[in-house]
Length: 116
Image (cartoon, rainbow, N blue to C red; front, side):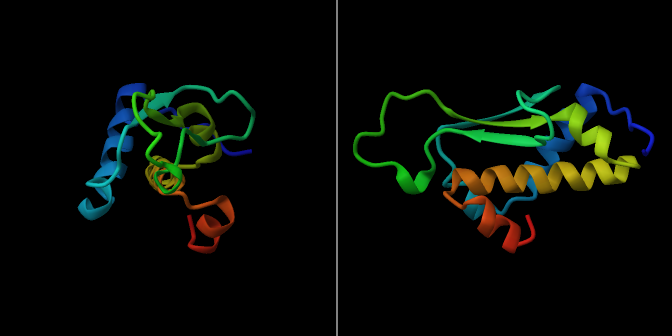
């Protein structure tokens, strides 16, 4: 097994913010009622990120006064699967884009086809 890469929470949060900045503005401009947070450990083993909410494609007239969707990016599992800090940067970006894809209503199968 590889050495576990230690990335501070503060640095990891910066990596998540940088990954969000790589998403084109025409997409981030239509993201709505969603919060992205860093969490140390997932609720289930082997998760790197998790989207919880109502995707944009499923929102209708009924959608109002609801809590924000949540995208959680899990710091410890990402660090555990990476060999270098550069790997952490790459994996954070992949995970952030993958979870944002769910916010847009894209399912896992299609995200994997697209390389995310």
